[in-house]
Every structure is written in C-alpha cells, then in structure tokens.
Amino acid sequence: MNAIDIRNLSEDQLSEELVKLKKEQFNLRFQQATSQLEKTGRIRIVRRSIARIRTILREQKTADKKA
Image (cartoon, helix red, strand yellow):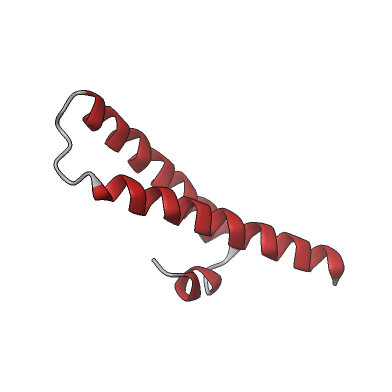
C-alpha cells in the first residue's frame, strides 16, 4: 500500500489497517523464530507499511489541531 492510497482512507480505516498489519507482523516474527518463514522480505514491507500509516495518522491529527 503506497502513501497515496493510505491518505485516501479515513482515520477508522487506517486504525483497522494498522491492527491488521500489527497482527501480520507478529505472525511473521513467530514464523521466523520457528524457522518456517519463507519470504523474509515481507517483514520489511509490513514494518514500513506500519510506519507509513502511523506517519499519515500523525499528520492528519496535527492538521486537525492547526485548523
């Protein structure tokens, strides 16, 4: 998911997506610990998506405070 797609989502949708990604990150870490993870690059993608969503949520909250 790129930044443009994320910016078009509402705050509730972003929160839901964040929870989904956190669960996926947990599952990936668990798979890695048990040596069952095949696509190790997925961890990086999920981690960056989480950061992207958090950044956009913070930007939206600060924009609301300024307005």
